[in-house]
Length: 67
Image (cartoon, rainbow, N blue to C red):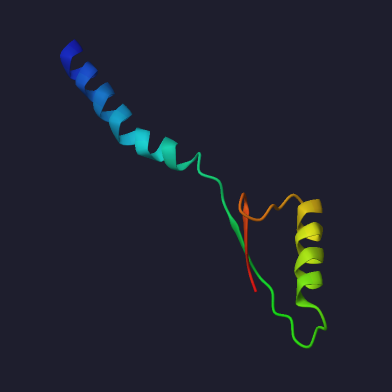
């Protein structure tokens, strides 16, 4: 009886391990920005990055910004 319990325990741990690893992955916010007719697009990008940083989003760490 103990052998069956041990094998069941090993099987349960092995099947649950990938789920625990997946739970530790960070979610990355994908942000799209469309700007039309702005005189200086670089200023817009800089201001957007600064505003997102104030909200806790840092490009390359937990956010991806596509222009």
